[in-house]
Length: 173
Image (tube, rainbow, N blue to C red; front, side, top):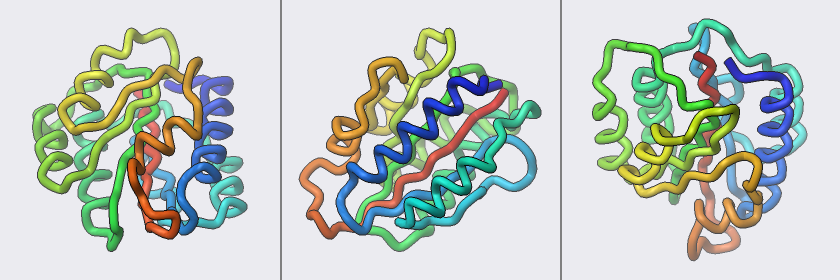
């Protein structure tokens, strides 16, 4: 699972990312553990996001990465937004699930939802690099991640008033 220190760094990064994104951008908080995927529906309210994060606990019973990712892509694809992107914070470990790994990646590509990977823990990031490359996103390790640089990657050429939906999905295997 995701340790407390990584979870805290993730919280700080995502809150800084929301600040760095164009005005009107929204984020939702989601998890791959438990039955309830969406922890916080899309919002541009930083205080609401901070509160949801403060109450968030990384799960121990992880949902398989392909299954959780497929659900998140479907969720984002159904939202009215100028552009959507998914930020996957993960140690990159995978549990077997019902879906083939290509299923969520094909869905993300067809819905034009790039997946951005934020690597935490000791993993080499190989899996996250593959996901981000296929979907048109980017992979960055938490240790070197910069919120304003990441915001630029997520919204290249976005208008300052453009609405961007960014989903934050935590995988806890």
